[in-house]
Image (tube, rainbow, N blue to C red; front, top):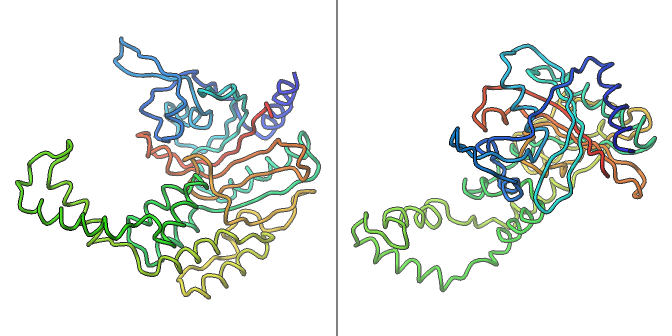
Length: 340
């Protein structure tokens, strides 16, 4: 099988670079699944003896983190894994990945990207593009914009889904989801409810909770008046794409122009040159993750030819372990699907 041969070649390469194999469990406790989109595709069953719900593993990167967290190991560790991920209504996804755990050195980011580039050129395609982004830049931009916190939170929450992100930005820019007549009606109902017992239940919710949410939306954090301008800034940022060497200069000019106190040093990106072998290296501000794993630098490597759909994706995920209730583990890694 083509995927088996590719797995063997990749495994041989990463072993030669000091990565040791980590054996993954085929099932996971569903309490570790926080990504709402993953929850839709779980094959679940109940473990009555331990009173818990388990699922076939839906993602291997997440599984490797869970398995590594079981080890009492605070030293930097280089691991690789392989196997299948199972999701409803999707074909079985065969994957191999490699990661550096307890990673606190930016040089590890470069190592992951560099090794990914070598694997890509050896086994997938001689020519292609490396696209590098960083979620922290997007978060820094949002923090400094004149937006109510609830809007910032909604945009950040939807950053993993380009379709809904565009929808929420269009709503913010156009007010197309607002009906002034309904708002006035809601205000009248609000004033009536203020006279009720705050602990009364209406539609399974306490009156005080309904009033608090209305106050939060309308009075404390109303829709910003400059929504259109704010959306233009966000969309302009997400269109920035340039050779990686030019990225600090272009980004700093952009932030200076819109008068935000954000500065990008020449050391911000793990790759400084515009090429690794035959692969061109770009900064892409729209390089946002499709799943809620990465929280910093992230990258993808894709072939120049549209006929070849094989790609490598990766990035840094320092916050994931604590977000699912595990000990703090800084990490960076990459993965490739074998069944494309």
